[in-house]
Length: 80
Length: 230
Image 1 (cartoon, each protein chain N blue to C red):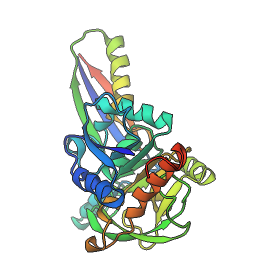
Image 2: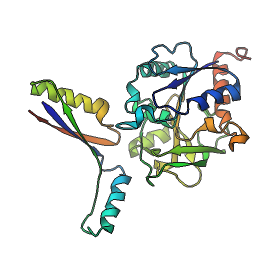
Image 3: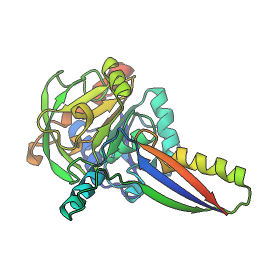
Image 4: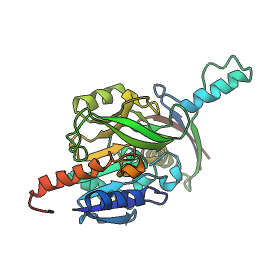
C-alpha cells in the first residue's frame, strides 16, 4: 500500500516562498495568479494490506513528525 | 557547576558554546553526543546552533526524536537550566518544550550580522545579569528564524512574561511581535535565534552575550546556596 501525504502551510501563516513564486509568475506575465502556497508532498510505501491500520499509522506519522501542527496542516490518501 | 553541550549530527556551533562557557565563567563543560541517555550529572544543558540532520523535513524536526531529547525533557521538568540557540531553539520548539515555530525569513535570505536586542524579561535563569529594557548587541545567523505563534498563544506569552528578547531595530526575519527569544512558564528553558556564544569578547565585536552565562551561574548558585561553587 502507498500513502500520499500533503503538508501545507496553515492559511493564517505567511508563506514567503509562495509570495516570491507568485511575484515571479506575475513578472512572467501570468497576471491571473492571485495566490501561491508552497507545501510538501511525500510518498510513503507501507508493508500492509490493512487499510484501517494504515490510516491510523499514517495519521500518527503526520502528527508526530511529518507536519508541525503549529504552522502546518496535513491530509493524505491511501492507494493499493 | 557542570554544563553539557549537546552535539547532533550537523551541529556546528558546539565549539563556540563550549569555549564560551570556559572563557566566560570557567566552569566544567562537556560535549554530549545526541545518543546519550543520561544527563543526570549536568546542571545546565546547552543546545547549540547548526543544521541538525541537515534541516531535513523542517529545522529541528528529526533532532527532536534523538535519544537525548527524552533526557532533556526530563531535565526541563526537573527545573534544570536549558538554553537552545538558533537550531537549538528550533529543536526546543519542535519538541514542544517551548511554544511556537520558526519558519523561513520573510526576506528568504540567510541573515548573518549583529543585531540589537531588548532584554524584555530579566527574571529567567539566563538573563538575570541584565537590566530589564537594556539593549544588547548579539549576532544572528539564520535563514529560518521567523518566529510564529497564533494570536492566542502570543497573548499567553505576554501574560506569562515569556518573551525574553525582542529585536530592537529592524525585524530581520519577520518574527511575530519582533520576538527574538522566549522561555517556558517556569523560566528555566530559554530559546533564542541570536548567538550569545558568539558575543563573549570585544574581539568578536561584542561581549554582551557573556552575561547569559554569568546569569545561569548566578541562578545555579542561588539555587544551591551561595557557598557552593566559589
